[in-house]
Length: 204
Image (cartoon, rainbow, N blue to C red; front, side, top):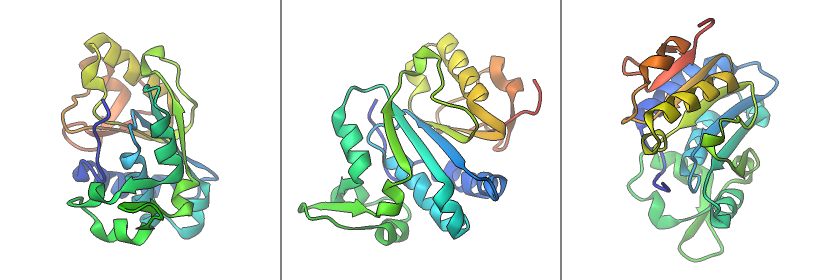
């Protein structure tokens, strides 16, 4: 399930900027959970967009927890070093941001992302089917290309877990192929009509 690329699902990312950024301004800490992060391209994409749209000092309060089930030390190393093959950046949207926040690495054919970005992204192994959240008070949970690989009932329980992990008014972002199951729809208010970005309901 390690399929991802920089600035995937641009429509959803644009909505995150439009809706999530205003909701987190002034918070002492901004917590984001990228569940099923694979090799971290999405975590870095979200970080770049937030760095561009938050007040400069607010970026010091940003923490992105990137998790994946894979027992793959390469994922952890890639995310920690922020080093990616240059080929992975070609054809991605926001070439301007990729150029702004990365530079050629010492290793030929690779780029390295800025230290400020690397310092706010933390990788850990986590099994979503454990139904135990990695924390709480998340302003945003992003889950892409994962829920389609589990059964329907498991999907419902995982989204309930995300609901519990979100702060009041927090947001859940899903991929373009994922529908919000009927059983958990009352837990959220749709921000995008198709439910790809939704906000935790005040009561359910």
